[in-house]
Amino acid sequence: IQAIGASMTMATNNGIITEIFPTTERGRALGLIGSFVALGSIAGPGIGGLLLAHFSWSYIFWINVPLGCLAVLIAYFVLPQDITFTKVPIDKIGALSFAILIMTLFGGIFLGQQIGFQDPSVELLFLWAVISAIIFLQTERHQRYPLLEFKLFKNPNFSLSLLCALLIFITNFFFNVVTPFYLENARQLAPNQAGYILMIFPIIQVFAAPLAGTASDKIGPKLITFIGLLFILISQIGYFLCGLHTSLWLFIGSVACMGLGNGIFSSPNNSLVMSSVAQKDLGIAGSINSLSRNLGMVIGIASATTILFAAMSHNYGQHVTTYLPQHPGVFIYGMHVVFFIALGLCTLATLLTGWRLWQKN
Image: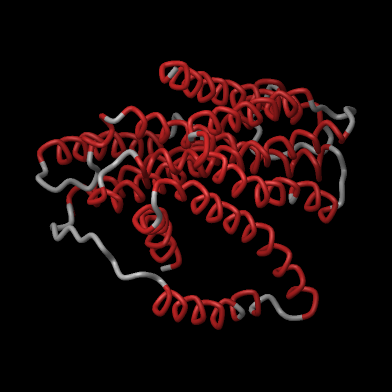
C-alpha cells in the first residue's frame, strides 16, 4: 500500500511542476523539489533516532498519521486544479507483464546470490522474466494506448537524460549498499559516526539543488548537467582509492563531492526530461522519469550485492555472501571492483552528456 501511494506521488510531482511553471522558472522549481527530497532523507533517520531514544518503535509509524493527514489537507486546498486530461483506458496486459518482468528478474538475482545462479528455480525465474519481456514489448508495439510510450524515446534529449538518470541512480545505490560496510565493518567506526559522514551527501545536495536549478534557467540545463556529472565522476575515483589505511578525509571529501554532483545534476536533468515532451504527455513523462529512478535503485542494489559478493568470492576462493570480519582485505577487494564499475557507469554518462553539449555548440 505504501509503495502504491509513493508511486502515485513520484509519478506526478514533476508533471505538476512542469505544468504550472514557465520554462524560465522550471529549473529552480525542480531544484527546490530536489532539496526537499534530500531534506527528507536527512530528517527521517534523525527524527526516527530521537523517537527510538524516548518511545517504542511503533511511534516511528504513528507519527506519520498526523503528518499524512496534514499533507492530504494541504494537497487538497493548495495544489492547483489539473489542466490536462487524457481519457484513455489503462493498458492492463502491459502493466501485468511489466510487473511480472520486474518481480521475476530481480527475484532471480536476489535468490541467485543466496543459492547460486545455476539452481533450477533461479533459471525458471529468469525464463519467466524473458517471456514477460517479450509479451510486454509486443503488447506495447501494438497497443493503441500503451503503458510505455516508445515514441517519446525518439526525442534524444528525453532518452539521453533518462539514461543518465538511470546510470547515476545505479551508481548512488552502489554507494548506499557498500559504504556502511566500509565505515562500520572495515574501518570500525561507530554507527553514529558513520551516520554523520553519510549525512554529508544529502546536506550538500539540499543547498546545491536549488542553486543548480536557478543556474540552469539562466544558462541552460545541458552545461549544468555535465558539470554535475563531472563531480560525481571525481567522487567515484575517490572511493576507488579508499582502502583500510587511507585517510578518512579522502572518503569524506568524496562523499561531499558526490552530494554536490547529485545536487547539480538532478534538477537540470529533470528539467530536460520534462521539457522534452508535449503538455499532454507530462504525466507519462513524469512516470517514466520516476521509473528510471526506481529501476536505478533496484538495479543498483541488486548489482552492487551481486558484484561485491562475486568479487569477494573470487578473491577468497570460496562462496561469500556476507562480510568476513577476519578478512577485511577481501571486502576491500570487492569494494574496489564495485566502485570501478561505478566509475565506468559515470564515465559513460559524462561522455554522453559531453557529446550532447558539444553537438549543441
